[in-house]
Amino acid sequence: MSELHNKSVADLAAMLKNKEVSAVEVATRFLARMGGNPHNAFLDIHSEVTLAQAQASDDKIAAGTAGPLEGVPIAHKDIFVTQDFATTAGSKILQDYRSPFDATVVTRLRDAGMVTLGKLNCDEFAMGSANENSAYGAVTNPWDITRIPGGSSGGSAAAVAARLTPAATGTDTGGSIRQPAAFCGITGIKPTYGRASRYGMVAFASSLDQAGPMARSAEDCALLLSAMCGPDLDRDSTSLNVAKEDFSLGLMQPLQGVRVGIPSEFFGEGLASDVRSTIDTALKQLQAQGAKLVPIALPRTELSIPVYYIIAPAEASSNLSRFDGVKFGHRAKEFSDLADMYERTRSEAFGDEVKRRIMIGAYVLSHGYYDAYYLQAQKIRRMIADDFQQAFSQCDVIAGPVAPTTAWKLGDKSDDPLANYLADIFTLPASLAGLPGMSLPVGFGENGMPVGMQLIGNYLQEARLLNVAHQYQLHTDHHTQAPGGAA
Ligand code: GLN
Image (cartoon, protein in one colour):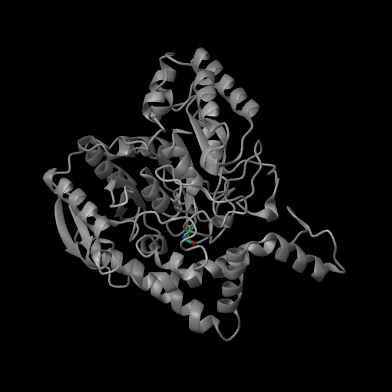
């Protein structure tokens, strides 16, 4: 039983179903591991809620009415609103906020039988690449606690890597599932924009935000994604009307003849040599399994940085106007009139990065600058999406690095927003195009930190990505490695 926390989602689901272990036992094991809040990964824990959910799962298993993932624990990024746990979005402005409803993704995973362990730390409003923008403190990387876990879903990635939970939800606006998954040596997938409902996800940039699972393997991600996705047309106007899919079904297809596109722009000067050589080895492995490597071009890759950092702040400035001290969350104690109350509330409770983005967003949307910045950015966004369509006429999936380097040291880039933005170069293009993307662990860099490989698919091709990743994982063991002391 000592290995319970090392079990995969798939194994735990099978063990629970066969009554080899109870949901209460499993939950108790993970709650014990979460004690003392290692890595500052969790923002809210209520063991009585978790144990009550686990007991309900045990009752369902006994009654023969269990869901596919009945009794398997999961923890949610604190961007998803929850009734039974506080939702802060990593911000002081929502300190102790309790939502009157659950996000659709949370409800769907509960319906599949999953037991909630708690809420996970993240960058404030999911703005960041290092989890250093959380109002509740940084998260440390379980592979080296002097380093960042990546962001914005840093708590999710650290918790899965440290075996505090077998699985977590994340959200990805410009890379926030893929990059922390890469930095913490786990697997994560961002589905096609619109696949997972945004209902109950605290909005950052609505045209980019997407939910997805983070776990140790592609097989586990397939199980989780199958439960999370599906139309939610009444509640999310951008939800795709595409039937639910069982992403586990295609995992066993051999890689023979699969065309893997290699964008030259992802392997340029900015890519650290240890990341490059680790990715090269992984690509050779895919080749050895029958895949064909095809050179492709994504010529506007570099432009994705200015385009994203115009569009995302523009949408954020509009979305975050709801935090005014009136409707929910923090309100300044002293103020002279209504305008003063707004100003003091927002000045006190938003962090620096959030303020920076609200200001940039308001600027690029303002009269006189709208055409010069926002409209231009939208036009280039369309071209970036077109470039991908051109590429997908030559290949089935695209492969490359997730980030130019491995996880950097805590504090290294915390005073340099631009350095953080530049590190997003390889994840932003798929986000701007609304394409599915994933990260899987493929080895370690010179400093012993995990390296992630990114796979990008055409619209609705999640099953293909998970298939390629699973086939790779059948032949390699990077996804089974645990940071020292965690196992
Ligand atoms: N690092 C990017 C940003 O800071 C992406 C964040 C995200 O995907 N939520 O905006």
